[in-house]
Image 1 (cartoon, rainbow, N blue to C red):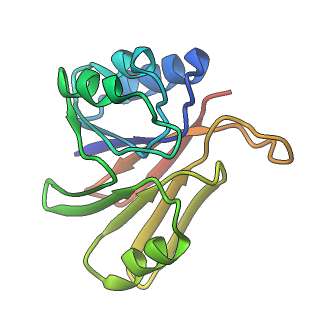
Image 2: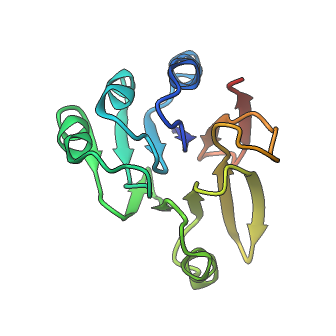
Length: 163
């Protein structure tokens, strides 16, 4: 099973469209958006041939966003605990580092996927893979955001730059 991970797209149509293209070309089975979609129009392109899951980010202030996502996917609110093909995922926007650290230390998840910092992360902590695809560039952080593709069978994570 292939899982796409993206975060902090912040209404940037270029990054949204490129992420959708990456996930379509890779043939992912599920997409996890780690928050800060922002407006409903930025969610609708993710209505694809996959299961779509989104969590609320600190900039997702439009209540219509949840309703829009629910038309084609699952909107989980602040946090999602998902099991996909026998693999456990925690999905959280990441506004609290102590919560991220607790999720990683818990040993309950194979992957902890988060956003918020706009900094790309791919690290192993105690048998858990910590992923943050990054987000739209902000001053002082010039790294382009990525769409991550996780191959559950092999554990391989591939980053596809969106910029």
